[in-house]
Image: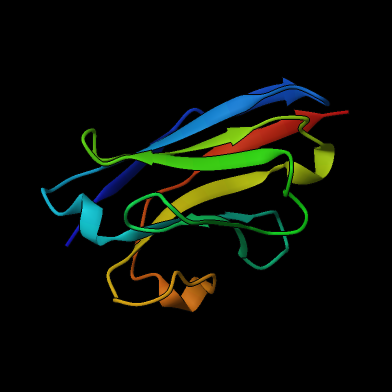
Length: 125
């Protein structure tokens, strides 16, 4: 199992930037594909970005492509989400998640078995 703890959320103005971090416990971090998801009030949890075990492949939702960057440091057991050009519609609780299954990186909420507690991102207009 892996335990995940997010940090870095906060309040920012439109056009601003934030960098989220997700620290993972355990010595097998590199065996997990990692993803970021978000959930706004009254909406379903949605995919934001994902990264392969080695960090060599990344995937993004169309709504964040070109603005967000996912990365990981396997030596530090940490995955990051750099968020630039933030918009009010990015306001949500952001979660990191880990997928232990082998194969291609997945983007479905149901594919990820391990979740952090979430960190709030609020973008003011």
